[in-house]
Length: 458
Image (cartoon, rainbow, N blue to C red; front, side, top):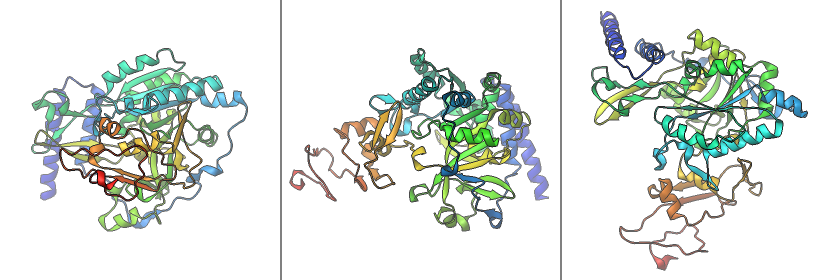
C-alpha cells in the first residue's frame, strides 16, 4: 500500500508542477519540458546505485596517457584543417560574488590588467593568426551573466574572432515544503536557477548555435570553465580525437591531496563513467578519497563531437545523474536539480579520458589562487599563463589566506606587491591584530613562521 501511496503523491506533485510551469511566461517551451523531465526523473528515484564491486580501474586504452598521443602534423596547412573543425566554448554562467566582485566571474582581472575573458580572446586570436584558421568562441551565459556579458563582448568587435553567446536554461526553484514553484510566489531572480553545466548540450541545440556550427563544418567543441587558465586549445588532443573518432574526451590529471573530492573516471559494465563523491556509498568514501586506488580526477576540460551531441539531444538520451542542490532563499528552503557535463561521458561512443599534465588545470577559485598566478611563479605570453621553469617542485605552493583576504579588493589592498614565491613551500596568512590596531609590515621584511602582533615582533 505504501508504494501505491507514493506513486499517487509523485503523480500529484508532477500534475501540480505541470500546471504551475504552464503559467510561467518567462521561459521557453523547451525550458519548461526540460524542467518537467528533470523533476520527473528525480521523483521516480531512477538514480542507478553504483555496485562497488563492479568498479574497475580504466586501462590506458580508456584513459590515454598524454605522452603517448601522436605528435600533430607539422605542416601548417594540415594544422589549419584540424583547427577549422574546432569551436571553443567557455562556461560563463558564474558570478564573481564569492570573490567579492559584481558581474560575471570571467571579468575579474587576473594579471597585467587582463581579465579571464581578455586572455581567452587573446589566446584564440593568436591561434587564428598563426594558422590562418577561424576558431570561433562561444560563451554559455546564465540569466545572471547574460546582460553584462553582451556589453563586455562589444570591446572585442575588432578582433579576428567570431564570438557567439547563448544562454543556458533558466529553471524555477522548488519550495520543498509544498513542492510548489518559487516564481509563482516571488518575483525577481531569486525564484530561478541555472541547472548546472550538464545543460550545455540541450542549450547549445535549443539556441540554434549547434546547427549553425554544423553548417559551418565544425566537428568538435572544446568545453571548459572560464576560470581555468590552463584550459587552452591543444592540437595534439584534437588530432587524436579526429583520427580515432572519439565522440567524447574528458581531460583528467593525477590527484593530489587537494583534489580528493574531485570526480574520477572508472570502467563500469564495459563503459567509461564519471564517479562523483556524491554517488559513493558512505562506507567507501575514504577509499574514494585515497590517491592509491583512484589516482585521477576530472578537470572539466571536455572535447565533444558536435554531431554526437545533436544525435543524443534529439533522442533525449542524455540522462545524466541528478545533483540535488538544497538552498535557502529568504528563509524558504528550496531545491534545485542540476546535472554535470562530465557525467554525459557514458552516453557517447568511443568515449575516452586523456591523462593530461597538471598545467592544463589552473583554476582561480579564490584570492589564494590569484596570488599564485599574479606572482613570479607564472609568466604571461600571448594570453597564455605559463609556469616558471625555475621552480623545481612540480607541485604549486600551498597558500592559505585568512577571511580578510577573501574579496579581491581587500586582497589587493593588503598586498602592496606580490612577493616572490618561486621557492615557496607554503604560506599561511591570518590577521590576529586586535580591532582598531593597524599592523604594517615594512618593505623588505623577511618573515618565517612568525606571529606578528606589533612592531616589536618585526
